[in-house]
Length: 361
Image (cartoon, rainbow, N blue to C red; front, top):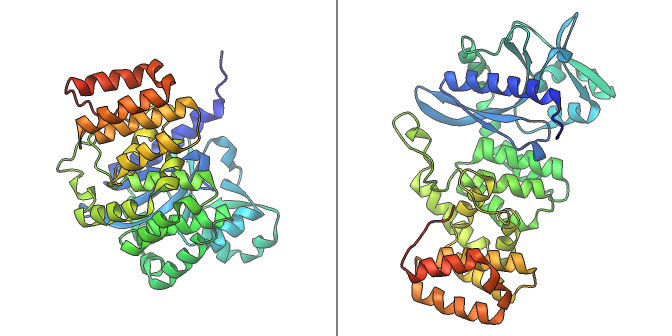
């Protein structure tokens, strides 16, 4: 029998509550991968009069009675997090959810620290939250107005320059990640932002940041599993931006970058999974089939990974030339005889022979 941390249920209650408030207020919340959250659980993008504003804030969500004492609500922080929030490039909001009363309350970390600057010298500090700042549907418009007062400051050229400078610290994950978050949160409408992010992918040493970049890029890929309708069509990425990302991906995602992405898909490409999102991202690369074929035939790797790589090649290339795919399949099975025992490979080859072009996932 496996063990499940009882705190997980309480944490999820808080996240679900915040999600419901944001969604009921017709705004957008994107959860951040817990493997690389660096003190944030989500990103809220504000929607005004039915239109996404291309601006938002990062939130850290705490849930449970441990964040409440006789003085009120609090968020414990160590010195590293105090400096992280104080010197960060983004607006970071702390939210405490009280499951006993079903309510949540918020605090602007940077404003709190600026008003209590002496706490930067403390090893730990309990950030106090005013219960007047309730995070709820009724007061969400007030919360949005407060956060929007910082929009000009965070979306200006000065912040853009600082964001690029922080993102360039590739060997300092926390600083690099903060720069990445700011680039996406405040400057993702700039083509140059995606140039810097995409061209730096393989140079980043932190696996979690690479994973985050793939997740961000997946927001701009055409996903057949998302139903676009009158209520969400305003969030659909523009064709101009999609084409820009496609061109950048084709130019900068070459063999080293594609090899890095294979690690996220080896367990299988299943619709709804992160591996499927990665597949959609690398599908931006126009000559992906050529790169995959080169990897499968010439790169040193284990048998399972080689078979997977060639399987993916066949899926991509079959839409260009079924005859060519079958030619290289025969060559592959002749050179790497272990491929003849791979049911997925053999099954795919048979379906292509029969003219059945089954989609990935």
